[in-house]
Amino acid sequence: KRYPAIAPSWRRAWNEVIPFLDYPPEVRRLIYTTNAIEALNSKIRRAVRTRGHFPSDEAAAKLIYLALNATSVEWKRSVREWHRVKSQLAIMFEERFPMA
Image (cartoon, rainbow, N blue to C red; front, side):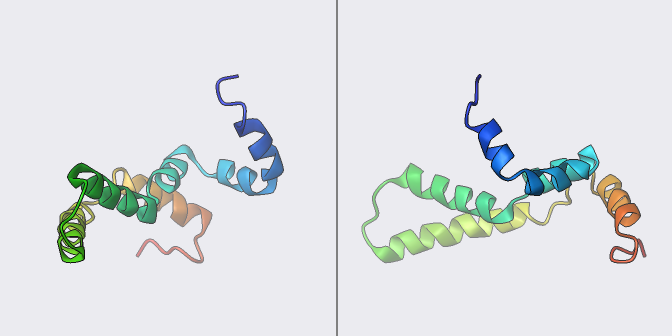
C-alpha cells in the first residue's frame, strides 16, 4: 500500500529480480548500495545545488573539480564487510573469482 508502483514493476521485470535475490544478504547489500555513477552524480548535484548560481562556466567547472577531488578521497576507503562479500563471491563464482 505504501509503494503501489513497486509490485507491478517487479512483476514486469521478474526474470531480472529473481537472480538478485539468489545472492546472500551481504552481496545484495553491496550490489544495491554501491552504484558508483549514481553516487558520483549525487555528490556533484549536491555541490552545485548548494551554490546556486555561478558567475561563469569556469566557476562551475572549478566547483565540480573540487567536488570530484573530495569524492576521490572517499573512494579510497575500503568497502564495509568486503572480506565477507569476497568470500561469498569466491564460493559462488570460484572459476571467475579466485581468492588468491
